[in-house]
Length: 235
Image (cartoon, rainbow, N blue to C red; front, side, top):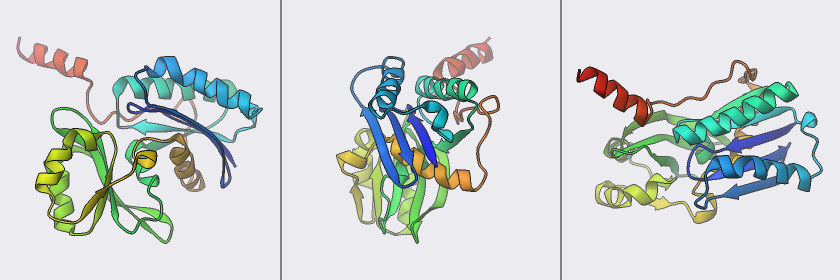
């Protein structure tokens, strides 16, 4: 099975092509550029460098959210357009599950932290059992203290990753009562290859949609929508 995968849910833009257990190509950028500038050129470069005909992919996977509203819209619009043009199914993968896949094989709990602003994070708790990613706590948007307290109650060593680590590191170090570690640089942010690998499991379970039916999952209203609602409520 050949999967083209895209992740633009956070600061990182990433595109990958995976066939069975072979990572054919991955292009990841985390440097002061908007996803509207990087995503399509990255996709074009992977296709060109690997002599890939997009009609030959079986499915297109994408980080469906939560994450940056703008990033999700760009990524999901890109894959929907490809899905329509190529008549290929879309496999939406929760962003934090994709992050957790980076730490395959660890015997610790995995806690992705994506900065959701206002001292909140998009997060969840995961573990690997017999090579399969298991959900201990499904993806939520909560205050950072809440997820740290939940980890303390479980009482098992945990590895943190995601862009929220740098933002909330002081709080982590003040609040954690159990052993913990931070994932190293090569696996601590979003990677499209992890989305592609997770997508294989979703495909086997029949969890995919047509390009027409697929929609991103935002989890919260955007800042503009919240501000509009606050103005309307203040009238």
